[in-house]
Image (spheres, protein in one colour):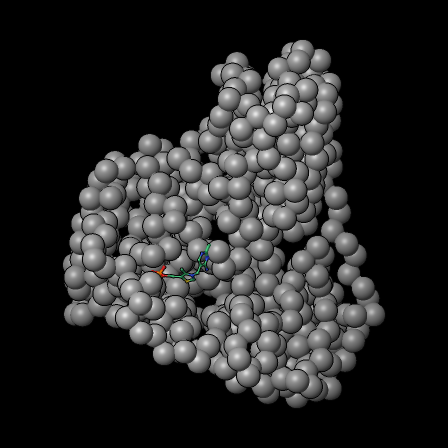
Length: 513
Ligand SMILES: Cc1ncc(C[n+]2csc(CCOP(=O)(O)OP(=O)(O)O)c2C)c(N)n1
């Protein structure tokens, strides 16, 4: 057995049965092993950032890691934007990167690069195998690292001779490490604040915004009057009927500071103290009151549900039913608007849908209009590197095994970073409905121009303009095997959405706004 075969058998033995790939010569033995050993679902992405984004979306829904297969340093470099996002989303990925054979590296061949250095910037765990007899054991450790709470990017670099040499040995799965313990003194501290102080915010992120944690957080809020909110950079929220109508901390620092100003005590559950994505001249970096204090009930590497349960027990908070969100909205009619798009999604989405939201400026107000939708999962861009919406949707659809409709609410500029995802959606016949929000500009950056205190002239505005020529999304989608149509108002949008939900495969709607 060669090293590549030991790798594939070790992955399968540990339950890693999906591989998102864009291979090259240094990975050919891995590709050959996938032929010889049944059981691995292999999904081709036509650019590495699609591959890494798919692995992120897959983890968020499957709650277990997939593997990637990337081609040496430059291939990894292409995938780094979405590995960055995945690390911020705290996704678990077994990120496998091929490399030059150990004895070839000294010749400085054209694709030679410092793969290890690149990997370190986007990984929680990095290792380069140096002998084929170690590949299985190294893979088992990579899988273990990826399976840590809450999920980690584990990059395993495989020089090609470690794949083809015939000393491979399969390694048994290693147990996922236990999450770090909750500190009982912190639980008591939080309970004291909730009992004694008037305005306390419980800020939720990570596992703290999934359904089991929401029930516990709601009990705490009902028993103590605390306010509940989700972190802005939350990658995944359980939403809709039966779930909490949670709002996120606003993106805009002025709005965020206004929202958080009343809270002098903030209890963090999987969240960090909120800061702006960027600094702006004359504005503070932090989004909370200057005299706010934080109680870190659980860190991301701790069990948020256990932390909330301990606090519920400490306060003896009685069971409380999550309130009914009221009737589901009717399908909207008339001119396009952000509220109208949100209401269309809430009115029409099938039960248990997945929303991949890279709507940027158009999507800031989507939440209140979708509280009364059926239960669904809402995925956000957690790392700010645009271009993850379509790959995440594609990976999420693979994890949903064709049974869950995935709806991308997708800004046009960001979509152009990784539009090859549409081809994978067509090839895999995935139930993906993409709504391209076609404003033909980098709208958010026009606002940012003002926020940094500058006035854009013609050259600056040209840098923020996506027209001349207009992107033709129907042709782009058709060219990758995805059927598509244009909607210019909410009636057309709703008709196209409805019909897309009856199709087994993908469909794209260019919504002209
Ligand atoms: C990888 C990466 N490159 C560039 C940027 C800078 N950036 C932020 S938003 C944006 C444009 C977004 O335009 P679009 O997706 O059309 O959304 P809109 O602003 O129109 O809502 C750019 C280029 C970024 N955040 N990440």
